[in-house]
Image (tube, rainbow, N blue to C red; front, side, top):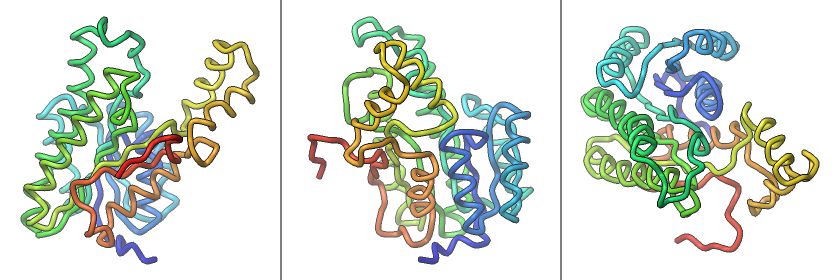
Length: 265
């Protein structure tokens, strides 16, 4: 299937590592020019060098999505470098496990505020900055990378922030869809990234098992029997970012390998 992405111009936040980097690579492989966004210049430059092999324009942009002025300056720089913005993929967020070990009744205000500033408001700031560009040209795609914690209650921080992203996605889709801009949310589960070896080692130590058994245990949380890779999540995002995805708007798409024992409809 031709995703019809050749020549499209994309901004990917959180684009220097993990799912964001995999998404940037998938879009570049489909012919997109891509601005990758992160707070760290060194990591961005390394990522840009890797992505250059795809032969499209890769623009590293340093920005902090918790700051509206930084976001707007980043979008202005992307427009200057690429000539416009057709696609926004929001993936700049802290991992769900980062600092979120407390139970619901003891979760602190500061942790919740930090998560909303980074993931929920950060995504909204980026969407606000690109929406006028997309509606003016009558076409665009915004894909918000959230997470399957939205469908569970084991992590208050993970659940609340991801549900909020899904709600924001639906509201943006209602507003922007009639103007040619589709907005969707992707829910990855446990995903293989550069953080995974450390996570497996920590689980093995905590469970008193080998790393091989720890990895198998994590795989059993999916219906495909293994963790999904960042590249496999990126394939889903690339489709949603394409003109071929017009039938999907405002909806959540799970990309975690399937959750055993539940039915979503």
